[in-house]
Amino acid sequence: DDEILVKGRRWGGLSEFQETGMFSGGISCEAQVNQMCAMMLGICGLPAESLQECLEGKRVDPSPPTMEAYTTSLDASSSPADFEVLLMLIALLFVRPVPSSGSAGRLSLVKLGLLAWRLAEDRDPQSQFQRRVQSAVTGNHPYTWLPSLWRILRLNFKTAAQIFNQRASQPREWTFVVAGKLPKKERLMTLLESYLGSIPNQGGENERVNDLTMREAVTPLDVHFPQKTLWEDVHLRMVEPKGSTVLSFPLQLSSSSSVSSLEKCAEELREIMQLQLLVRLLETRLVEVLRFQRGQVYSVAVGTDMGLSPPKMGTARKGSLSVRFECDPTESDELVAATREELQRLRDGRAAFTKENVSAAVEQDRREFEELIHTNSWWAGTTLDLYFSRCFVAQPDVGSIMSLWWTARKETLESFNEDLAQQLLTAILPASGHSVVVAMRPKGGKVQAQSS
Image (cartoon, rainbow, N blue to C red):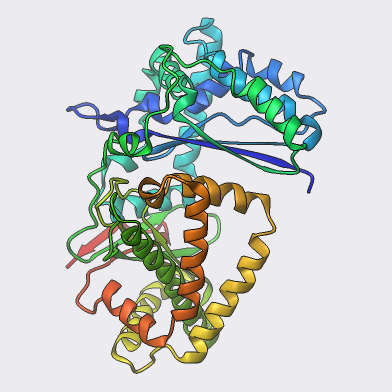
């Protein structure tokens, strides 16, 4: 009740800055660190320390845009009383570019800050483990590589500033969503027109390019799940022995969207919602087996990741489904075998999902949803996601797409049953499928990798 969220997004992200060559590779170092450089060099026309001093006593968080695989996103917030200040800072973000040069001392401090961040990533066991998981699941795709220390030392500040400034130079390419305790409509429209509506577009062209054109212009990442089963043990130094294990499977949806068919887009949407219910069922079952029956894990989580799947229309989404649990490092192998055995029991019907299991999952989903719809973050995030959904390409009206989403959710919850769950499970996780296992263990031996 006492906050206002502003979320923005545009097409184009880190995939546009892929490098090739003998002494380079992966995503450009300047692209990966451009946000951190901008924060330290100064955004909104002010050095970082001056901006912090100006905002003292105000509840405003003017976070700069961050680059993801295919998009660039902005998340900012403020109290209702400071909403005009937030809009002014967003406008300044676009009209006052980050300086590409500065005193030698300041640039050295920025490099030291980046080096400290990079070294901290190498010292943190969880960060190291997560990178190894990403590397294993993507077949060591260069997108998962962090910039080297040498690359940071040779950082081109001019290029980094240009990348950041280019992301915030064309407001016509951005979509903004505002949610929270907003002022009355007349006052709100005046503020939006005064600050966001007055931002000029570089080049003088103000007409917005349609979503399909911007979506198709995105450079895809050629990421593939490994074609054979892989097991990797990651031995890390840690104060207290702790084991984290991730068991991942390739995931690909059977339906795909179409520019000319809203029904195909709705079909893909329903499949995603069914997959979310299946993930909930799997997590509940594995918690029951691994934690309550065996008593060998601290926590179990099941999730999907399709964030690197190309956003082009007509292509089926792909990614991975992962089971993650924390346990005694010496029991990791045993628990992976137990997880695979339980998945096989689910497939062949020896321990199939029951009507009661499905009803409980659907009811839990409904209860959580009832809580979520009372939060500003859900409305802001969901509305922005719908603007960038494939359904919006087929029907470019967010009100109609929200209605379609709501209807698809209602139909999915009403039609989902144990037979559909069984069918979806065998299609997504076939018995003959391959997998990737990455296990974190205390350092004390060589890092082992097994494949079969």
